[in-house]
Length: 280
Image (cartoon, rainbow, N blue to C red; front, top):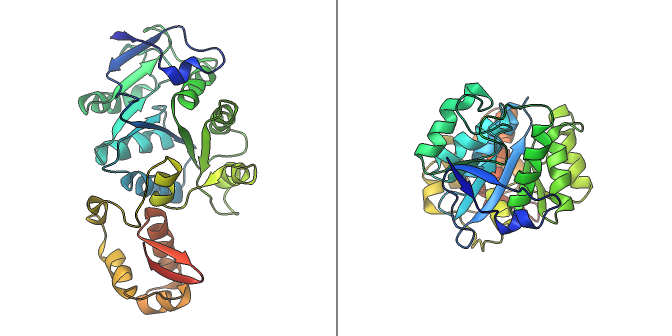
């Protein structure tokens, strides 16, 4: 375990850390864009799908994904980053010694992050156990180290909302995935958007928010993961169609067609413009 010089972004926040411990290695800030992604511990299938699709769309770009190693959405974030060969960095709410690393159920995930070339980072002494006060301290580091924080599902009263608030205070970009008006898990993200957070509904939108130029298509490697159903949609959109026309052409139940189209929009494969669906 090594100590790490305080990165410049963390020197700019109130109460900057005096010392950082690291296992693994952080990529250079000159060559990578850091993105924090957090969300609800009690996630929904929609949140899980949105997270995985958005992260898949970042594959091939010089991006480092930060999350908190916690159960729930943080775990999905880390695994999605690993699955797409994106550098994953975890900020646990504890010290980094194996005897106290929190949560213990994610010790295997922590090893996978290190084996893949990522890192574990903490300002706490190596044997500091997780406590109620350690998580807000950890959250400020995740908010401060990244160019932007993306929120995927959050209730109105949650630690995730606190992380978003801190990011705003630190003049970092706050991004949020909109959700159903009927879902408690999306109350926080929808409120963030009302307060000025940038809504993110596709991977190209996320890339643009991070400062990348997107020419209209994702890297070919992202297209390789299209399912048979997604390919049918792309074939149907050889020319633009209204959403209703597209759903009728798919000849599947309306609820399934609607869910498929929504997830393809999040993935960045298709877009809706001027009342017409078209390939991205």
